[in-house]
Image (cartoon, rainbow, N blue to C red; front, side):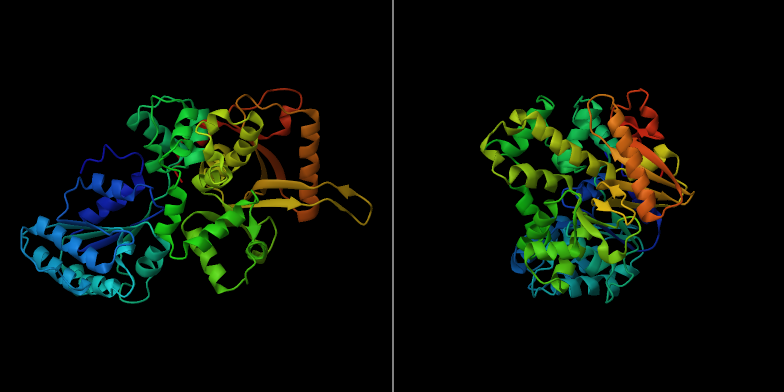
Length: 484
């Protein structure tokens, strides 16, 4: 099947093709963050050649969804079925319709499956019975299921220990676009001609979420687009943040509170710091919330170099959420031209931290530029507060947000600087880097070679201090496709 309209997603398309090529019945589960393009991928790859396609409805009672299911089934089958009273009846009607088709291959697409699983609906048992007792033995049947509620998909389908255990032939996690894919999307789909600096700023606000990127208007400047999407009256993304959490999590208020608490520190918080910030016990419910947020890629868990697991931090890495919490939720939306009028100092402070998170989303590209894609590498961070050794040596506080501990006896200490011109290393800054590397070696007892790495859009201005960096990663490297 032709897939020319699909940007990127090469691996995912190969998986879908392998499912199609198999003569056996196959179920494939597609999951990922809301708005990431799951439905778009499936519909465009299969060119809407479905024998049945139904989408769950958010917050809709089972009785209403069963009525919509019945209407959809009538449209596809041209047959008359009574309105089912239960999901077991609904799937039995679907079975009767599919069994009547004289085709070597059947394609069924059930979108937003978690939204069908309403309280007391027994949806999951009916779905499991349908697959295990008929669909899985019908040669040529391809069942594609999607869900934005990543935790539900992982717990109820992919990692289920009950009737659906091991039943999904393949699972596809659909990640947000990389910078490479963002550039393709904006240029080929939207006809937007921006430079890579502007595209990086776009990523730092919208992330690689196709649904948000598709809202950009090529007739407007970058700043006008951001004002239009977030700050004008009726802006389409002004209320997206709240709906995003309500559509994914039942206790959405608690999830939002956890995210807002973590967002208060750009480097993230430990589990204890999160609990203390919320004023709650560090029990099972908080653990479950944090686990789910990690699974849904809102936050990431990372450890400091040489530290134990219990000292791990949780950092907000969803670009859209970071932007919303810093600007939109703080009352900035009262100014319809807020982003265009934002002071340069405020913009610089935001962009510096946002660029660091952008780099965390592109570690594969950084590794590729460093030529270490085939080298086992552990990603971490490191920091110390000001302290004095027993011998009287004073160490200033230091922080390294990205440490690449390589298996080839090298540790890369990465500096990430967002600048619209080549970055200039001053004598004082070079001294700071030397002191920081010395502190790192002293306190971690690391005996590997230490390399200073600079990640910056426009490269390094050459002067007598620039040799402090062993390697420079530029915008073109971050925009490169990867083989990892």
